[in-house]
Length: 111
Length: 114
Image (tube, rainbow over all chains, first blue to last red; front, side, top):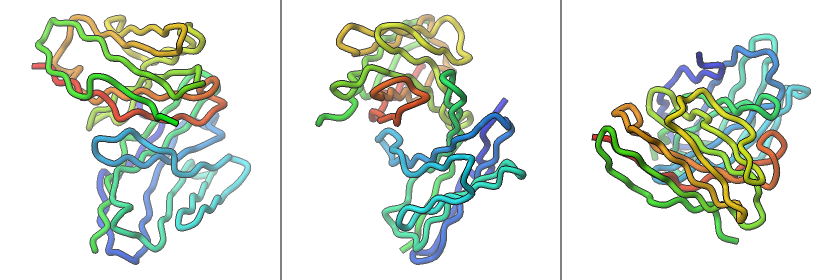
């Protein structure tokens, strides 16, 4: 049972435009969320995180929004660049027991 | 500082065989976690080792096992391989326990079971 879901397996965006990657979760115990970026043949790298006490966290071109009532978070990349083309995973830890990942969304930024 | 390294990078096995994958964490990191990545399931947590002890285990059968050595290097073993075990196996290290520390991932081992 997927507790963290990314329903869009892929997304294509024109360079310079905004990329919006979505993530839904089912477990209301999650209180911290992370986004990872993965290039082919490399392991995921941490991108940005958000605590449930916030509804927004911004780091340069990357902003994560959290809607706790909807159990939904999104990653905004603006402006999108070709180097942003990668697979993006959202993840949520649960205590010391587990780290739940979504299935990933492949972002392609078209030059 | 060297990153997380995994060996081998690619591996081809046949059904029924067993395989051992190796992970060397970043120097000073004591926690090593293993993940399986498949297209349909995404990243799934296998287990976490800290100070040579398995701290947490995901929902995988007993064919999947691991261990951690005193230098924090870790190995993962899969016995009686099945076709569905074909995946990218990622190892991640962190300074302390998974829940409290940022993880750094290795490049992964691509296992193909024929």
